[in-house]
Amino acid sequence: MSTPDEAAAVARALVTAALDAGADAADAVVADGTGLEVGIRLGEPEKLVRSRERRAGLRVLLGGATAIVSSADLTAATLTDLARQACELARATAPDPHAGLPDPADLAGATPDLDLWDDAATTLEPDAGFALATRAERAALEAAPA
Image (cartoon, rainbow, N blue to C red; front, side, top):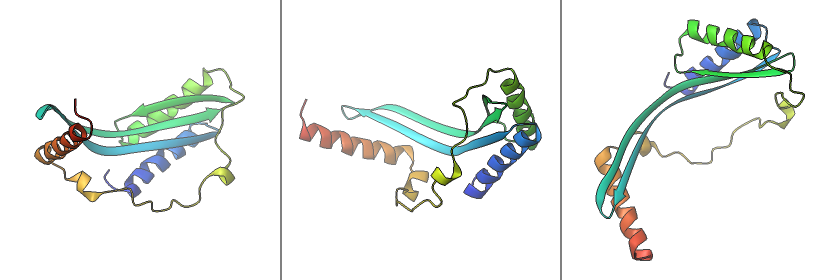
């Protein structure tokens, strides 16, 4: 999974599987991303962490009860099993009169482009990250010397 359309397909598959397994309602979240975290302390590299996240979560509502499950295995068989497990958990959970999905009228219809994404973030290498962190640390120390 690497595109928003693929993530949406996983979410739809989870919700469909949950409804097929007996849920009254369901919603899903899908995350797929990579990360780079660098740290500089007094001009010296202190931290380097690369991460990869690929995960889906499902919330089901069944008979007034709620259950939430997640998995990093996004194969079709696992998604179907995850939905079944969520429904089983909801059946074993006490009802919550305050649980539920939001009214669709309260949800945004379209997401405006806030221009918050920088494509350079997807290709940043550790050396460049350390250079940026070093510049940031220098600027901070110049603004407020230790």
